[in-house]
Length: 161
Length: 161
Image (spheres, rainbow over the protein chains, first blue to last red):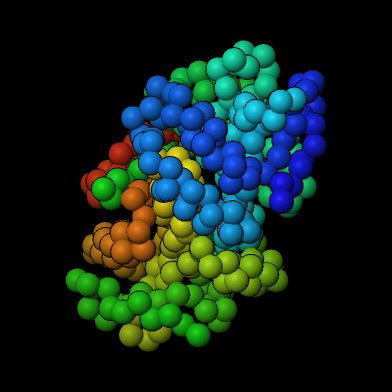
């Protein structure tokens, strides 16, 4: 069942929902249509279906989509919640794998999506929203800073493959 | 029940375990004994006990401790696993809230702890280990780079308080 999160304020005809398994190919296409993503994604659908099933079963993770009036997936991000002892036992929200379809870029859709998701995280009790952005994505980093994010941390990744 | 993960290779007398509720005050003391952590942690124990209960109930999160021969907590980190569609449906491991007690610093304990945890993440199927480190912690960033982590991302945080 799709959890319909309602219309995206400020963007007529677009609404936010939790992704369904039928939307997985469209989400993967969005992930792959990207200068960094295109080398990371494959055409093997089984791995994505299995990943979706694992993600869908995890109550702390939410794969969100933006849907237009034709039910096409025009944006996606993954919102997770992590509890930790640090910062007074804080609940953190974490955002991964953000994409907006090319056709809708530059129209404030990303900003509206983030504003919606930040508000959702606050209502769920998160005291911090965190994400990492590839240092090559200068425009994205400026975008996050314009939303109030502070580039206070180094994002470090260790590949195990 | 404590999940005893066994001895920490290369560090005689120290072993790794999943934290128990009785160890929460010692873990919080380690988190607070830090230039950045000391302003973030409070003496209110209820919030930490509640956070521990939530964390303990989440099968994707593991609060680990290093214990010495007297069962004292001499190190901690939080290891989480996040599934996402990106990178071919990859399982990522994420590390948060790392501390080693002052008395044991500079003796390779942190390196042994990370080597142990990276190996654990690999065995659990993770293809990537990720973490963020405050840009003020230059020594820590160099330490992670010496373990093979690449500083490829900006770590951005938005406070909701």
